[in-house]
Image 1: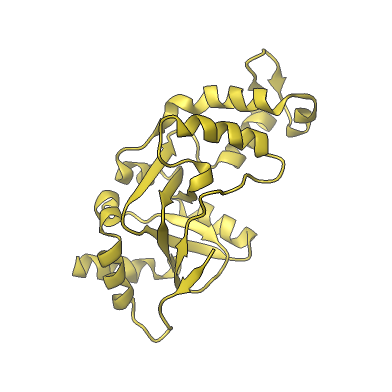
Image 2: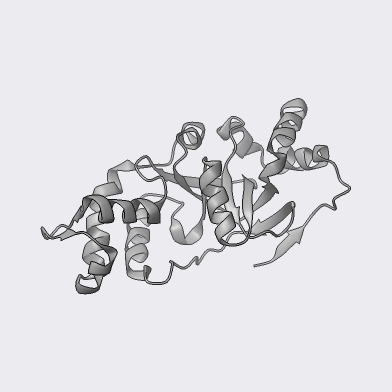
Amino acid sequence: MKLKFLLEQKNKVEDIAKIIIKDCLSFIKQSEMLPLYRGMSNYGDFFKRSVRKNRRPLMGMTIFFNYIDKELKKKFRAYRSNSIICTGDYKIARGYGEFSEGKAFLIFPIHKFYFTYSTKITDYINDLTHIINNEGFKLLDGRVLKSLEDDEDIDSKIIAKSWWEFVKETYVDKDLHRRIELKNEMMISCEEYYAIDAKYEGKLYAEISRLY
C-alpha cells in the first residue's frame, strides 16, 4: 500500500481545502459538510492513501466476516473486504487510533465512491461482543451464545448466519448525510482517499465553506 505525502507543514489549511474541493466534490455534496472519521496509525497530518481490495478479517473472525462479506456483495458495492471502515463518531475513531498508536483522521474519498451502512451497528466487534456477553445471542438452531469463549464449541458459520439474519435488513446505501449524522459504522469503497488530522477539523471545514 503506497502512501503519498502531499504537503509539508509550511502549507496552509487553505491549500488542503482547495485539494479537497477539487478531488472530493462528490463526497462534500453528499455528506453536506458532515465530518467522517477513521482511527489510524499516524502517517502525518495530511496524506493520500489507496484502499486495499482484499482487506482481511481480524484474526479468529475469518469465517464470520467472510460470510458477512459474501452476503453484502449480493446487494452492495461497498463491503468489508474492499472498504475502509469509518464512523461519524469522533470518539470511536479516536479510540481505534489510540489502539494502533495513532489518532483520529478526517476521511475524504477521492472522486467516485460507494458506501454501505447498518442502522443497527455502531461498531461491529463491540456491538457483537456486548450483545453476547450481556444479553446472550440466540442462534438459528435455538442455542444461546452467552460468551465469545463458547464459540469454540459452535460452528463459526452458524454464528455468522445468525448474526446476518439479525442485521441484514438494516443495511442501506443511500442518504450519506443522514448516515454520518447517526454516527454508526460505515464501509467506504473507493480507489483512494485523503486523510487529515482531525485536530484541523474546524479550520478545514471553515475554509471549505468559504471556498466551495
